[in-house]
Length: 114
Length: 114
Image (cartoon, chains in turn brown, orange):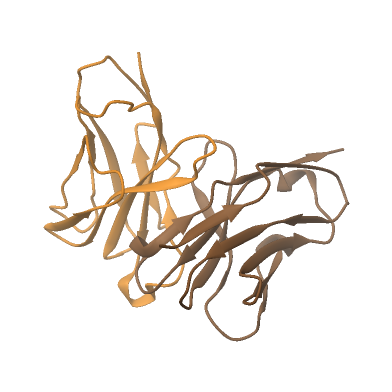
């Protein structure tokens, strides 16, 4: 069975500092990887995804993530955060076609302090 | 604008009552999903439907029921058999032609059992 672990439940950082949100997964087969963002009392919005090809994936709002197959990781990074990045971030892994195969991590709450 | 509309946004229920959460989409998506979100647990799949008049149980279907009579609509009923129904419920959809693409989410419905 596949699982997704987000190693930090909360990450506080200062504005304009860099941030990395960590995600590890367990799967013996090829996977598709996603990062979603959730602003307070809203649904989720796709930040970026890795399906194949280049292991460095760029997304919206200046975020990027790197797929590392040997470490089974898909960490999310941003070089300089803004107050508006305060949100909860979810890593998700899919074994194949269809969103019903999507497994979400527990989420990481990113708080940006001025 | 195209999107997913969930209603009501907030709902209070007494124990022993059934409640129905509405989900409507105008994205012409074939597949629709219901997730439950609890703090620190990420999203868990309740039910999904890939075509009208057909739906499948997800990981936590007990105490819930759904219908898919129209492509645009996928209501979720939280029955009195659901032991712990207080949660944030999210509806999502995806086009079958883009099965590994972006899940589109509604803004959620927060159910509180009094």
